[in-house]
Length: 330
Ligand code: ASP
Image: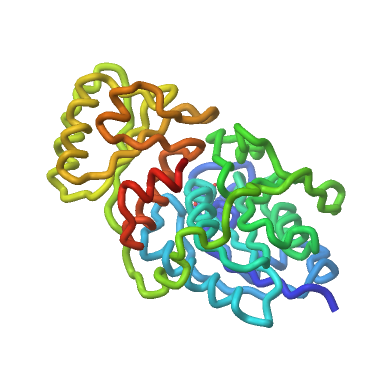
């Protein structure tokens, strides 16, 4: 019989079409439909019973909160269905880690959800998409993949949604988990897990899964990227937009230049939640300076700025406070 795996196609390079098979840029992302995408994967029917739909056909750099919520709602419906044992999402790589983490935060069942993408368009020489799809379906259909939340599968590696990030702008091995490493591999068609994604990560930890079904937008939470000579004027500008939270992608251990710190502290006084994350792709952000604690800034721990932003958006939607954010991240 085989497992019933449902494919949700979102577009991206994996569905990209270029005029020239040697071209890996200048193509149209999301141009190849889900049926053609699956037809290009030999052997798929022997791995699982695969059906699918085209939910979007976008370059994922253009994804909006409305698209993200549409994806979250559709995946929830699919996971609730007895007709689905696992879900595979084909997605552009630019924001794949964001959709993966968002889905992971609301994941509520033991069925696997796997995101995959490609760095080379479907029409390219040595396109990486077909094998990535085959591996993603293999993982979604594996008994051992249950209870592991949302995963990302590319280049024969399995990563947890919480840890994974797009590290290279070019390489097919772009998805890496700089802190914990891959949680498994797909070797010669065999799915092997080394360890669980995050043993302390509760399913649907924020209780947001149901709440998001009634949501068509997410609160505005900007990321400010720290750099030398940052003077904090963007913090002031953001405060005027009415944002309820800010992520500051600081340097190293979430370090903030003094002039910016002053503006962020004023933002906290005015009721804005400030999370310190880092532009460094590995390591974590801890409490660090005493003054950060006194100002009420919250350390993002292992979360990179884009994931910290999504967490804040969901926490705001759920009516959580700065104290709740602090507790969750601790
Ligand atoms: N810009 C593309 C996208 O994110 C890149 C890719 O898929 O690799 O849709």
